[in-house]
Image (cartoon, rainbow, N blue to C red):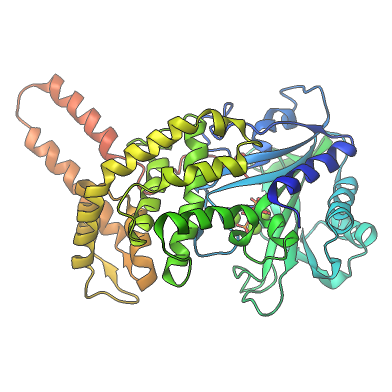
Length: 469
Ligand code: ATP
Ligand code: MG
Ligand code: MG
Ligand code: MG
């Protein structure tokens, strides 16, 4: 059985053998795009190479890219712990062609890797194409020999990718693996597609048009290829697992978490261990790339992730900071592939310890309040917005932490009332200041208050559509 580290290498070696330049992962904080919160796909570092703004010394490339999807348009935070296939941090394996090869070669390369090199049973694979993309449909028939009933035409934007409102765009084709009918879920395009039976492993984007204005689209003179495959998902397949959290890497992280807490990953504790293992990775990699917990922006997303992990540590009964104790296991597993993790290890460790120590007391008190306030609530009920706001404002509970805490009981939060409470508090504060006569101090105070109060509690929705495949 190949471990994650070998699978990453064999992916890169395969593309190297097929004339691709192996390029290092770019950092999680995108250098070239202030509108994008975190790098969330392999193509992010190549955006300008696709548009032709930047010339690279190669026309084809392959990467294993660090990605975080915990804010903005692609936010998988709420899925973590519950689905078999989502992480906040994951590695996206990808191959790219900048005006070099196109659909036929991209399909051939992907198919050969999966079925020949990796030996995946092709009868378990299904593909989707954009509903009007007859060319891709025929190529799948011809190159892969897939029968027509296993090629699903999808009419939605799930199978049409665009860099933004204007710029390169084109249809995509996704490869799915059927884990069998003992798992709930339907094929792509069906009503039950969100289940975990059919798992999407690889997305091939065929950049063939340029959107010039909202209603004018022209053919790109040199079409390009952008693909992305989740390393953890392909590893699960190759290791005979259905669930990403059962791959070698996650098993070791979860075992470390079990050892440190003395609680087995069974029953209710299972979700907590999964969340902790996942959030350990995103927190550590974000800190290694220079993000620190903060009241707003990227730092606030990091804080939300860390605090959510801390609540799960608390659920497991950990009465000492936990995350930093698991860090050595992560560094041992991933530090060779990502030396920045080794370099930043002591800084990450200190940051985790500090954040966890600081939050511990208010976490306990906040959870006490939450228990009281939600005592009578059950499936379908909602926690009032005032309580959620008090938890946020006084106890430092990000809204999603409160939501996550109530989720197992099927209880929701009245988010409109939460927002209203926040607005009310701001207005109230302004009223108290009115008439103090010192306009200059007042405006500075409000600037600060707005900045701090306007924390990114509902996500970062200024993110552009860019960089998302
Ligand atoms: P899904 O529909 O399962 O959420 P996606 O369509 O959002 O996936 P893409 O944007 O197409 O994913 O990203 C390319 C590949 O990256 C996916 O095919 C999948 O293998 C992997 N991937 C995407 N999101 C995640 C995640 N949150 N955790 C792990 N792997 C992911
Ligand atoms: Mg998704
Ligand atoms: Mg998808
Ligand atoms: Mg996809």
